[in-house]
Image (cartoon, rainbow, N blue to C red):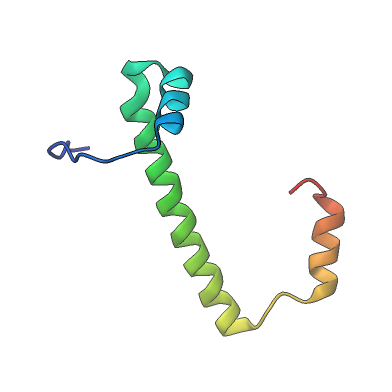
Length: 74
């Protein structure tokens, strides 16, 4: 992994304080990198799901209902 030059960003003060509390100042960079990577992965996964739905059609309601029963807290 190469390190790019610093990019200044503004974050909500409460969000930043919570992140620092959760990670300690030394872990903040890694925490933010993981969060950005996770968001990019989620966006890529969403695009993949859209492509699959465009090719195959929407998931049938009975299959969605079965999934809801199998994983009710999801």
